[in-house]
Figure 1: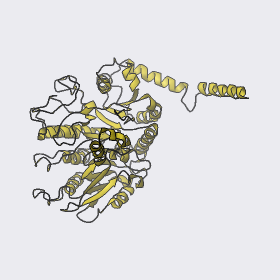
Figure 2: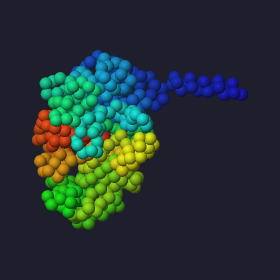
Figure 3: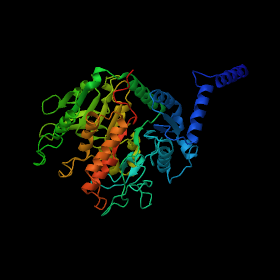
Length: 485
């Protein structure tokens, strides 16, 4: 009997292995071969979007490639194995992140790409982090005693320096990137201006890839002309209460949202402010988001698991939204682009495995817990990859966020980026998500040029960190508002 079953199974396997299923067979192979030949032949300006992912995610990303191509965004999907194995270009680089960056450089030079979508987040690891797709840590010490390194996807976007040479972010060649620890930057100068527009889907498994592919396709196909898109929800309070410092006048978060609203003509603002009682806790936030909106702006304080702010001139915290409460969002396909102003909301390296790090000592273990680094996933990624709601993309900071109050009023830092995102969309009419991210960073750097000869912790160093740590978790080629039918 077992022999009969085994023979039957082999016959079924043979049939399934030789019969095209739903267009996945010979047609798929011909399509992939055509794309491979086109890429290897080095045709110029043939691709707009480069998607880089581990081999395990490739099949789940193919519907996104077809969708992008159908809207005229010429897209190529490349596996990390193909990058490391020199399928398209000779592999070069000292570590996996640098190999990916060199590949992006070659794709920019040879294929004319504008956008890069990195797919992959944490992949376990206790003693040492493991990643589905490589990351780069920047080693800039802001003298906060909080962190001396942080994640930066801007590294993958800054391909060339001001002299037209490869921008390694490691000018002294010691394998420590973006180093700024002493009296001046050890790795300097770094251009920082994006040459390509980079976003990341920090997926930790295939299911999250499927969620994001479905969300992006649905958003771009169905959002155009929907009335909910013309709503803009802004959530803020008194970020820096005057009771703590007499120089901190006014309600900073609310002032930031007012500025953003002024730059968004044609949108109906829905403000949740602590000063007028419209924002008293998470229920207010959940209810507003669940009604649907095109843009969502949080301006306050954060950590990897929570966002909050203050009541007027009070040290009392008003909780806004935590990762535990995100399952209660019910906005379905009415997905906003979310901008979150606050520290560490986009620190996408956190893991529940940090609960196991008591072997590092009780003080270090408590530090992980206190900093909010023991969650399943960070706030911004949870918001983005949520099923049946949340956001289509989230922009936030992987490290400490700074404002003019932190910099003694010598420059606005994160609040400049957060608010000018809306200027770039609403006033400059840029409607591709990654372009807004990149152009806002370049404008920021032009406004606050970096002096690489100042010491670590200087205001100029903080300006550099601010640009480096602004993470786009989402599709950089996303057409905000969707495509017309």
